[in-house]
Image (cartoon, rainbow, N blue to C red; front, top):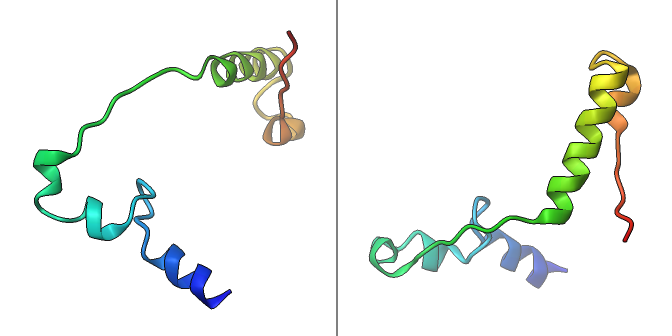
Length: 71
């Protein structure tokens, strides 16, 4: 447990990489990022927005929405 806690403290809270890598000044020149779309998340967010638009943002259930995918 202590080893896990120590390891987790060594990680950057923003990117999840070890701080020794992402916070090294040389990383600016060596790290590269790419973007992509998680279509599953996009569809689930759209479904939750449709529900919120139909039922109101002030509806207490709006803060407890979940979504699932079907194929």
